[in-house]
Structure formats: C-alpha cells, structure tokens
Image (tube, rainbow, N blue to C red; front, side, top):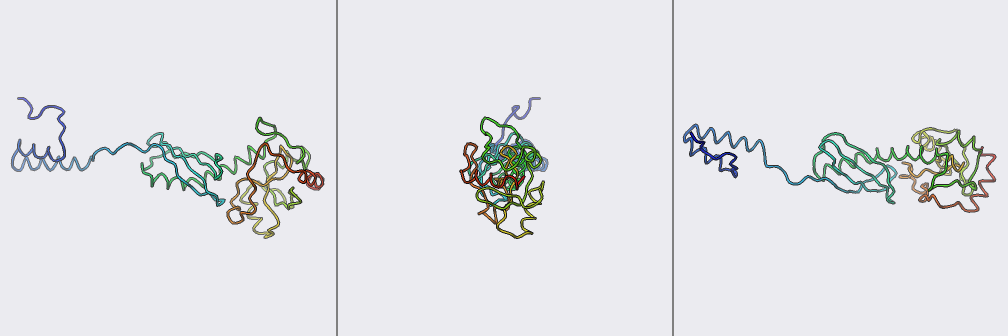
Length: 249
C-alpha cells in the first residue's frame, strides 16, 4: 500500500492538521490533528541568525567609563574584551556556560563582569608594571626618578603605601601593604587628604600612583594623568626625587 503522503513533505502551519482530518475523519482525525498542533507548539520555528558579536559601554569601579566587545564562540563559550575610557585594553573575561542570545542579556553580563575585569587589571598592573625588573622595547629605565637602592626597590616592588607628595615625587609615610583594598581602607581611616595611595615601581625605583584604583571614583583629583612609556619626568621631579632619596630608602 502506498503512503498517503510523499516522503519528506513539508507542511505550512495548519496544513498538516487539515490533511489528517481528510485522511482520518472523525474523532481519530481530530486527535491526530490535536497531537500535530501540540507538536508544532512544542517545537517552534528556528530563530533567525545568532548574535555573534556586540559592543556596548560599561562603567568601572573607579568611576570611569569604558567599552566591552562581546564575541560568541559557542553555546557555552563567550568572550568579553574590556577597554578603559582612553581605549587601553583592560582585561579579557570569559563565561563558560550558556548565555541568552540577546542584546539585553549580553549587556547585562558585560556590566556584571566589568568589576572583575577591573580587578584583573589592578593585579596585572601590580605584577607586570610595578614589579618589572628589566627593560623592554617599550619601556626603559628612568634613573632620574630613582628614590631608593636596587635592593630596596626589589623588596618593595608591587607593594602599596600611603605617600605624601613632595614636589613631584612621593614619599612613603606608612608601612607597605600588599593589597590595594587594604591600603585604601587605611587611607580612609587616616583621613588626611594630603596623602595619596602609591605603589613601588621597581624598574624606576620610586613610588608612583597606580593607574587603576576605586578611590578615584570618589576622589578624582587623586587620579594620575595617562601614563606614557616614553615620557620623562620633569627636572623638578628629578631634583625632588634626589633630595628625598635617602629618606625614602
């Protein structure tokens, strides 16, 4: 017996139910049509093209804005690249579980990951910039900034301290701290707005303001200008650093 319908027939919405009623009229046909309708409702039409890339604005704990570029690499494999307001790369974060494929869900996830990307950038700056001991093609030593011996710079590298500005240099006035959060708490407890939070720069043997710090949200005047690897400090900075070298070491 030949089948009632050709194989691989594709029905438009409602056509299958009508055909079943014609082949099996009565209650049997109605039951079959209802089952087909339920099946169609359970498996809706496949959505359109997936949203694989998206860019949006985000805000960071230091009060600065930035951008996030999202890329979908798989159903449970999502990448978020964050940049700071000046366009410098901040950090890359991943989501290794399913994420709704919509602009709203992607931007919500980006806003949740932004503080984590900021914290990653804080630690990376501490390790890769402040703890760096050797020169690179982009970054050279600046002996005119030296405040301490090489041994002292090695010991203090990547540690934070409350510092008092002396001219254009920074003189530590507290014990060293390993955590930015802890030194920020100490700064608030001391309550002296003349002090700043700085980190020891091993390569240049001096104390320097970190680029990323949540304190800058409430105290934007404390934030340093954009850092340049090729810029040299002014002559006043060099002379001031030399005058306090012994005290800082």
